[in-house]
View (cartoon, rainbow, N blue to C red):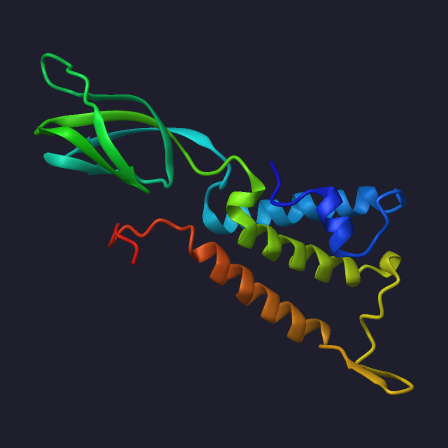
Length: 188
């Protein structure tokens, strides 16, 4: 899945939904930006199934990916192979109903299923798609114009490199919020 839809990008660019002339270009931009985001993160934000063995003891376990949506299997790797049950889930911390002291095998689903859940990522995707689209000669955008004045309206454009730097910093700030913090699993 991609981090925005063709319809949302067309709306963001003020392109009529009935105008299909640039659909192939826009769809290619969406796919490219989605792959860039996934490469930066090292994984996709869309729901996936993960399997882990965790060696620990106590009344909670900390998994690698958040937010945990559904636990498929969770059991101790002891001679009995007893199943464990959760009390509650707090992003990537699973509180258990009883104390354990063996290695735990867990299979769970994590990440997101809807664009509404990652609206900030969609916004960053829309911004980068727009920047890339405007740099394309087929877009008709005036990306090489630095300043323009029409009667009393004055508009100044960023240079291509200034705008690209700002957008890249913006998407990094957004995506960094979704990266797991291996040093401190408790996000404040």
